[in-house]
Length: 534
Image (tube, rainbow, N blue to C red; front, side, top):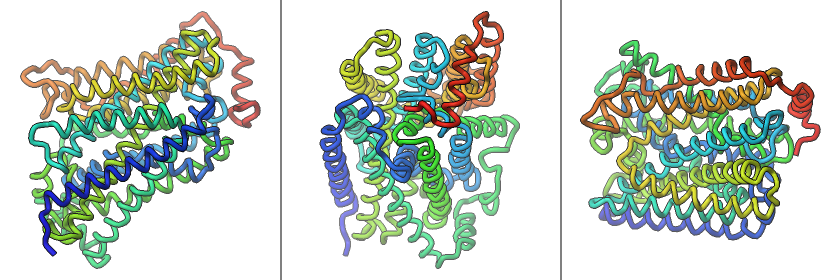
């Protein structure tokens, strides 16, 4: 049965969007009745099982950039696009081995709880809270601008009103989720979203494999033929490796992806939602399994899109390849003029929208927790704020951060979102991870070293990006008509990550203030055994 593709898929897509929003608002209404204390708001009462938390971590981590962006990149540049999948997955081994259990045992609500455990509270919490908010806001901007672009692509946006309305709607919804539902609502929304995303990815993967009779080799060779690059499509070097600069850029990006995950505030706070460190470790194992399966499927989806559609068709629709999966869904469902094509396209579009809503909720919660718990309660009120006032500050922070994110996103609608994500990972790897590792494993590390490591990593990341080809002088720069770049790489990680570690070492060794040996011993026992943990 033939149908009018444009009108039907848009109507069905909007209907599915509204249905998902209704479900998430119902979850928020239920959670709001169970978010009475700071512990409820920040951690969901630490009542989630390892499996539930693993699903929620997956839902928090697998963003629209993963679902649409990586598959799209593979469909355009083949093997080199797959390298993103490896980086995002391998990063979880760092989290599992070095961070998950130790952070769960040493902290309470935020990353700064760990960093300030044996340091002077105010300077460390100020630096850590600011870094957490910067990382979260960069990531938040990328998700919200990406949401506007995605919905505009799928629904059509002749005058820009759909993009603007989407950004405002996403911002308003994330404020409602966090301010009223806290961690309980955010976690259950992420669990629902993870289930939808896995179901959508599995469905498309099975349909791609059925199209090629289960022969993966045939799919890969078909992708190579339709890509326009031949067998080079299946080999490394199409995007990275053509020059020394591109090789260094790849290494820099890989370092940021692999090391940045362990320093992302919205990932770290998830370890406080389970009752024990053992559950935190098991939740990471669950997450690794789910995320690993998901990224394996992106390989099939990316090469399948190239094989079924052809790279040129995908590039004509969107230069970055972000529409590869919606177009693939439409084709696998029976084509543009079929009921199956319209339905499958609408479902995949709705899953992508659900993905964005779940991720922005987690980011808003992490940044509002840092603002309220670290900056308001510990720095401004010097630890004298009662729970009721801190909880009110957290909700107000969610509203303010959401409003700021909406305003910045509206002014940055034409911004290249890829650099925002890369910058968020680079700052997390350069400022947060060195500080966490030094705090947990270096006895001499002190307050000055902590502040210097955070500020050194943060400042070097931002400065290098400002003077990189991403901002000026590159193929698609943010600032056109000017060229003031002197740093040759798109991602600063290869320089800024060592800067963060080096700043921490120099700050520690040049400080006259020694470290507190008894507090380090207490932290070591708590980190390794869980004795005294919240």
